[in-house]
Image (cartoon, rainbow, N blue to C red; front, side, top):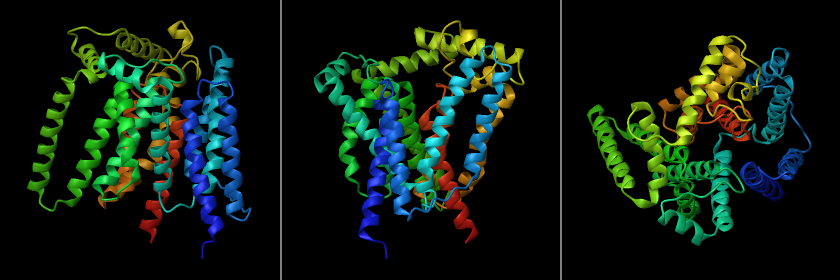
Length: 400
């Protein structure tokens, strides 16, 4: 029988893991932020060790092998990098992240599924949204939204705020349609407010796609008649299009709808295109040119600034890795996704809301990589941990 003290430690660890996730965003620009992050890692690992009677099971799993493969290749690219110091700096960040993730993973590795980690994602997003409202001020946010403007990058990147809030809303939506009442519904309002205030295209796409995919997956799983399934899909698509059209006409959504429209204009070659979209298109162009010059090994991880001409990156994970790591880099990094793709998709045959959320976030991570560089981001490896934990759960079920 589980002791009261063990249950208390379990709840405490989940709370601290949530704050650990929050630190990825809120303290990301502070010089002391990394100490909060490292400190919480140590505390979670220590409490996990106490919870398990000081038994620490050190084992290398597929999750670790895939990420270690990319880590080793990244460091190896120092040998042919334009400037190896940038490679070492970037890959040291990845190494630190992987070590911290492993310490946290040792506690969660025997969970029956990824539900607790997904709850951490949900609550972390709500905490960040509430903190952002406190930081900017509700009146300021209301004024910006009413004027059709977006908040500025101050304590962190506004896209990160919007994206975290969007992921939280998707998890809460899943709980609602699966008839799991959650107090988290109360926090949906500030989260939605921050999705709008961020003016983030990525957050908007995450929210729309996530809700659509989660709802359609559940509807299809409950349908036994193919005609009914097709009808539901068509109806949801029609409602979705009408909802987007309605959103497009609301002034509060003007920052994000204008930016989405300008992105579309970039592809069609018609209408006005904003500076951010043009810059991203140029990054793709110069990144591909560099890839075709050094297709196998690239110019060294973290060295994209030499083809851009200033200290930044290519804002597209696929292009960034192709240019800097070549084909070998792209294969070693995305091997982590390949490791769990087949098992996650097979788990969709039997409806399970946790697996559906994992597949939703899996697709969204791959989609967002067209708009951001994620290979050195902490949240990327946290999502890897969620995916592989769910893969373990599905493997155990199939073995039984």
